[in-house]
Image 1 (cartoon, rainbow, N blue to C red):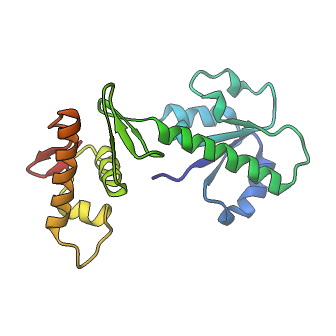
Image 2 (image 1 turned 180 degrees about the vertical axis):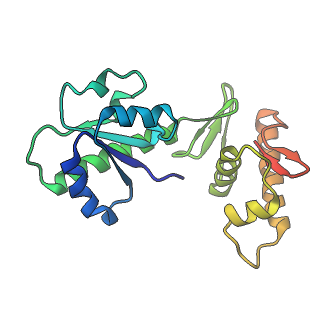
Image 3 (image 1 turned 45 degrees about the vertical axis):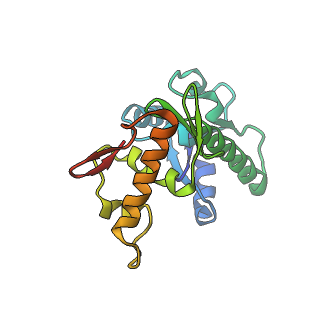
Length: 198
């Protein structure tokens, strides 16, 4: 779905160490020498704090007082020295918790999509989805413009020469029917001349 980020703020020595072994990680690493630079990135919407961890080394760091930052996304490393294995374990545990929480409450239109349980729900009903249905919903939700059958075929299924366009259309038709049958919602996935959109 997305690659998480670890933002190291005012802790350049740690960044330099992690950068040397960055190929071992499944997350991106970013360095901010000043917290003002990090806050500027947030204000410019270049960082989504829901999918990033902030690593600092001071208990009284000014980021704790910023309303824009979820304090649960801050990892304080104030006991030094620390073994690299222990540090990477702490980072990974934080990221796993963060991803689980994010995947539990993804709001799309008037629904909540729980990627962990593969259930879409509203206030009255819920529907279990397949992985392919979730992929379709996520892709359409991320792209605000209508997406053609060809784009869906390439991006959601991955290009396969033996996949026919009616396979994509059939999946979309069944998903729309299931949503309508369960929630009485014909407009969750909208069909337009250029393709489908949420």
